Image (tube, rainbow, N blue to C red; front, side, top):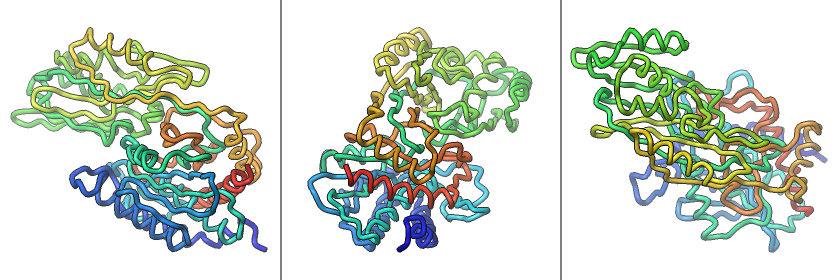
Length: 453
């Protein structure tokens, strides 16, 4: 009889084909058509995934193109495996077509290959393998596929409203051997007048460190030689073009997820730092310097907070100008033992003293699930039994997952400890083929462990 590892290997080519199909959809948020709450491409990607689920013998349901699921098994209790099919914008700097899955040196390149379409494929084939093994399923198992995780998780809220919560769940959208705590979040924008900045645009999404910003500046509004000296001193790449009516500056950084801004280089922050050094005397630039600066810990706006599990992080992801004002987005991840009021109150007070206007438009409290809970123990045991790694322990993280929006659920996989940076939310995102197969094996064991509870 084939063991689980052999069964996974037998599906390798089919898994890669399935991932290629899902990656081919540019499933970014698009609200231009009321018939598709998150965009036509998202709906098409969802339906394609559900068709594969149905072909694999699952009962499938599409909940109004918000979210859908494939279901196996019987019983009153429900296990949810909750992944997402939406992606952040591809952005610039790719060496391959981001929507054509490309294999190079044991890696599969494409937007969503690791976040989160690859994990969806691993979970889908884990369920297929359980069917092949004719395992008794005393609980129902749903592969729940959302279309709005990257931009608000309204899809999961819609699912909970329509279908309720799950008895046990995991979302394959973080790290092994599991995440028992997730930082809270505060989403905001700040706006200030600008007469020196004629146009500005930068950033792919609020939850991504900006890697490219373009600005048109009024002629002679600042010491342009100082701008160049400052950028060079910080080893920031840029281009400067002089036109009759304005100077156009492109500043380049390094993208990273907003929960780990220390892994990126924020092009917006370094642009503002250079403009301030060049004495531009502009309300927005001054506010940015005073409230944000080059740091990502919230020190400038009085929210440099920490606990035993980590520090607050702050990311400015997107910037634009409308009429006479410049607006920038703020993405804050605050420590897991704190609450949102400890961020909102001092931050509001700090911005009130500046020339800018702060608008806090979203908060999420942190998530905790006890380490000794049945679910956490079942999942960690699955990881350990497949990998043999008993040293790596469950963790907390700054990223937010679906786990915050549905009961008795944690993030579990698909990134392995000490894995190479797979460039989620950056150009040249990839998943290692061996890791795709290994996480599938882990998910098989994880579901078996939960079925035994």
